[in-house]
Image 1 (cartoon, rainbow, N blue to C red):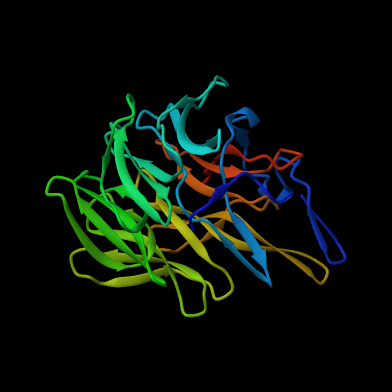
Image 2 (image 1 turned 180 degrees about the vertical axis):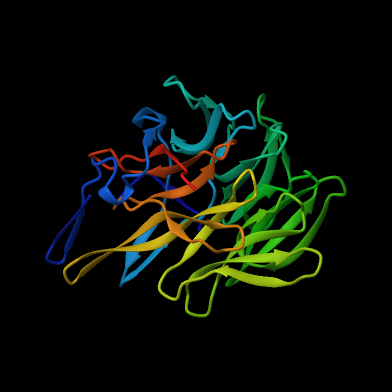
Length: 323
């Protein structure tokens, strides 16, 4: 889970053993209730998380590489330029250029602080991923948070007292937190893609089960109770993100497109109530839809996809949330 690349795979036509995707279509009939708006252009060089398909299986990089500013007017994304990956920020309603926010070599993922003043991010250095904090608006000075491990998916608690993150150790991945004031690390539970609830009582995360599928779990910080809220024996779910009103979760899920006896495995955007009920699939395009985040008013979802591009270039898209 340490690499990020541009859109690689190229709507949906199958020829014998070959699989060919036509990315040029913006939407498909199953998405008729949604309006899709392209936010970026090819010149923004938006990174596309790796998606691997092999032997009837699909795996994808689940790290968060999109986030919206507190005022809702800007979106931050990961961009690949000059053999580096860095965080860039773009005004949502303007087609102007983006502003570079970090000056690093290999930023992997990131998130805004709740007050909008900071960004925490992880960067790959050799065999390690280290977490840093930097200003969201000015300068390149960074405060290093972790070192000597494979840490990623940093995200602030609502009260900004902690940064939650995932740590890979041997063959397992666990959720940790960093106490910003006390400079203290704590371990919580196994899992990845942590997402703290606003009231601080619990966090959501993704976990791999015994059959190799990812599920969405809710972990209570106080009682230690653990509850699987979204699971399917035939597909994986990752990257849960809670809506501004705390009522919904948006996340990435595995889907299957079929044509006769041929099956094409895909990644799409799903949503569910905060308790895991009312599961609904939001996208159906044969392009890979990944890294969903909410607009600050909860009316829209931003995500990365190759849709609408004949050559499969990844861009940021916005769709309305109708629930």
